[in-house]
Image (tube, rainbow, N blue to C red; front, side, top):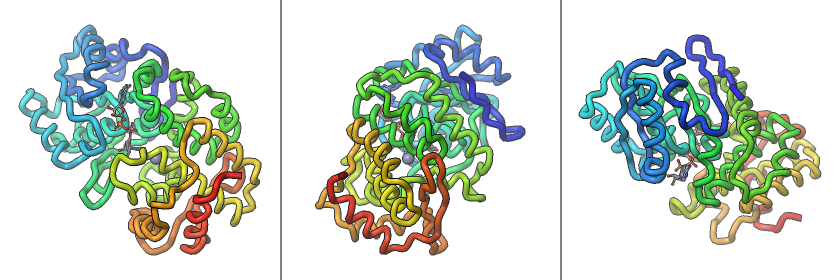
Length: 361
Ligand code: NAD
Ligand code: ZN
């Protein structure tokens, strides 16, 4: 399937289909992109897939150079982005080139940021290879790196020219990374697509080959939200933070790497469900359908006692979503529908975090 993301002169297609990796050259060509390609990938994905992408570009008459950075969130940094800029200059790239990001969300955010600043901005193509990036991060144009003071604090809005999703690349993803990505998929279902809750529950977590349709449906949800609120000003895009307020607080309370993002978001989702039930009368049965999915994908739902509520509250209040003083918390109103609420108090959040320490009934 093809999802079109409509943003006037920054519109683009998101193509999802098995085997597209070997057609990238002609797909890029048909967007009208010219010039040389700077392929940016990480040290895990490069050895697996970069040659196939370069061969395909070559067949279409597009010359390319490959730039590999060390895999992992630590590479989403100013120093890595400036190192890549220098590499690109030394490889002969200039404003006529374009960037191709091949990898997960880290690669997309970092390479997208490089594309946003290199020669004041060159076009870029996203070729996502993780669940997180194939259901979420590759579309929408948020690019950036982390600051020592916090995640994603430096960045730019820079929409890709094309997104090419090949679900077959997911086969090589480590199981834990594969499963955690689904925290973002159930988020999309919870806020926008009630029927997808059941479709996700029907998946086999060990079969690392979701249908192109399921991925495209997630990207379509992301696309519709971004079309409505590209720069997160009207509030619609903020709905994508469902599960992320408490989730980020938990993530930031732990040493990096102890819990994956999607795992922290799983706990944050349970907290947001507790608050939706309490403050919005959200049906318990619908919460259970969502929790059941997270459990099947072995995502954590119970918070360990060694992570203190005070620490989580402290981290969560530093989150950039709280700038301005008011708490904007995403609650569900019914399955498949969400709102940004300013009725959630700090005590409510604290209580929900405490409830995360009890088993799911
Ligand atoms: P990631 O890019 O680090 O990938 C996870 C791991 O899997 C890495 O070790 C990577 O090398 C490896 N890998 C990737 N694809 C593989 C494949 N096909 N086979 C084998 N190994 C593979 O992490 P991620 O979970 O994809 O993305 C997380 C990042 O995305 C975070 O930095 C987060 O902030 C960002 N993000 C951005 C947005 C956005 O809108 N821009 C949205 C959500 C998340
Ligand atoms: Zn997330």
